[in-house]
Image 1 (cartoon, helix red, strand yellow):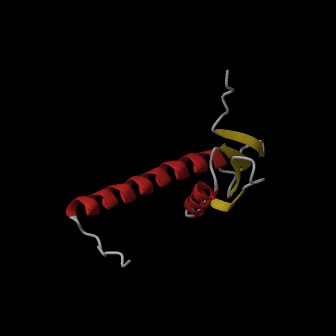
Image 2 (cartoon, helix red, strand yellow; image 1 turned 60 degrees about the horizontal axis):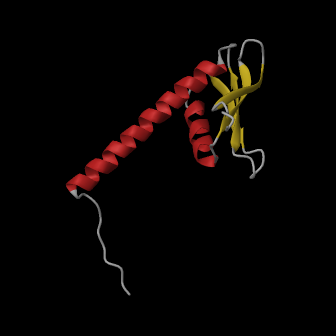
Length: 110
């Protein structure tokens, strides 16, 4: 039987969660950099960084520090929701462009 691993795990934090490190499983630089960018757009986030501990580990660590003792967990949840909306918008526009044929076409020379 396979062991289930939590998608997001709290590694360490301050008592009020204003500073915390979260580990996200089965993700890489793609989501790490996008999530960091989305978190840093929040003016209440003082610092955010991510790391991939080791290439053989399929996890990223995201460190979030908030101003005014606000919850980093709330900021993380909001950033994930906002990132999801951005991805949905990009996908919708891409599919619309394909349906309408509004893209450049070229033939490869051999």
